[in-house]
Amino acid sequence: MRGVSERGRGYRVLTWRDGAVEMLDQRLLPHRVEYVTCADSRAVADAIREMVIRGAPAIGVAAGYGLALAALRSEADDPAGLRRDLASAAETLRASRPTAVNLFWAVDRVLAAVARPGLDSVALLRDAALAEAHAIREENARVCERMGQHALPLIPDRARIIHHCNTGALATTDYGTALGVIRAAHEAGKGPHVYVDETRPRLQGARLTAWELRELGIPHTVIVDSASGHIMRTAGVDLCVVGCDRVAANGDTANKIGTYNLALVARAHGVPFYVVGPLSTLDLALPHGDAIPIEERAAREVTHIEGEQITPDGVAVANPAFDVTPAEYITAIITEAGIAYPPYEESLPQLVEAARLQPAR
Ligand code: MRU
Image 1 (cartoon, rainbow, N blue to C red):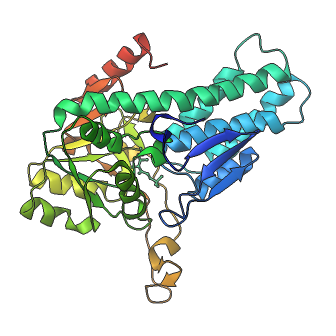
Image 2: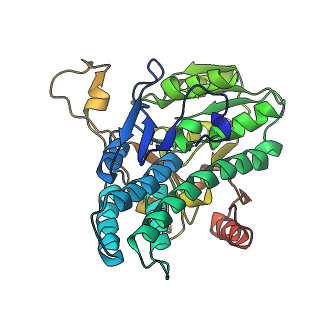
Image 3: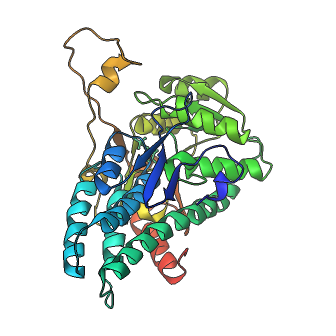
């Protein structure tokens, strides 16, 4: 299955093919376009953990297919046994990465689909799990395009934009969130120019965002993360736009490490700071960002570049993969149901309610 942004493109982020999931191996980009085939849910969990696939919405899509694979591979011969196997696979998938709430949302959604009454055979349950995984993926594309359209009035002509991490089709399987906003502005003829934060340590900006922007023909300049203040002072920046991995009820937002620094610099320069994410990235059960689990990744991501050690032996390393930007630094949060402005405790539930009345499906 090819999505909107995949038509006419030379690569596929995630494909369901012959009872398996094929993923573009994002660890090898931009120099090699190779695919990893996951034949069972454990392989999907490994691919998420190892960042073959990454980005909050894409992780959610992958997890949905992980459960579809668990249903397909289960040897259970009755619905109760199959549901037990799915519950076990769900635990494995949930343990793969902790911060992006989309993963947990997608797992819960597929489990709810197979819990529906009337599914009284193993075959029906398998169909229901796969249909829900497909639905999550297809909705993702529509939701991203809607966010892009909602954001258009916020983007001035010839906007100079700083973007952090990667939030494009690679991170969502289709179109993108923050990068989708930039893409929508480009397609609307607004002529944006993107300053691409390289995004240490995994370099999602330098490797992935620059690759996607080049494919889309959107002008861009890669900068090191610490250049944002200088660029704002010298070149001038109209806005910053980033994605999100989990947004708490008060608007505090977890996103790729370095997002908080960028938000502080933006505030110091009076530059609007926009967060873009689907409603599936909201976690309104959490009152504030301190409750968001922050993934700590291997020290080697910091101590080594391309396999070469760059630090002295035995150096102490902290490698939080995400940070939390307090809501007070966020100008607005753009979702498929519209734009939320402070106070987010009020505006976010209003958007959730609006979407409930008019779903994206
Ligand atoms: O560690 P990653 O690459 O999965 O982190 C990705 C990000 O932080 C993105 O900004 C976020 O998931 C939003 S993607 C649309």
